[in-house]
Image (cartoon, rainbow, N blue to C red; front, top):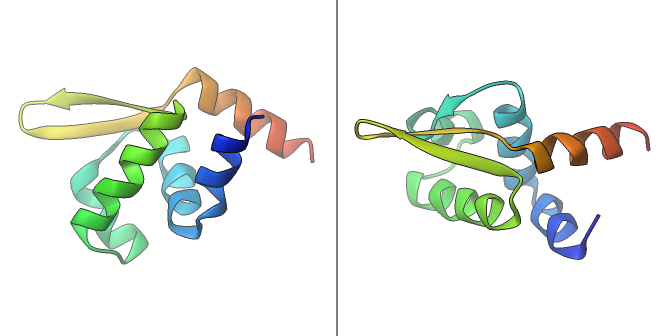
Length: 82
């Protein structure tokens, strides 16, 4: 696992976002309430997660839907072995 992924997940908010996204697709509009953080802050955290390749995003009309990527699944599998 590279240091960029570790740095990304070291942040508590990003770790919680990643955990929520790993349980199934979710609209970005639902995430601020989940992590009790502003929409702009959540957007910045999601940008970091996207940059590491842990999650992916697709558009559905005006909504942005996030899901875990294959790389994210491998990271979860690695972490669960610790």
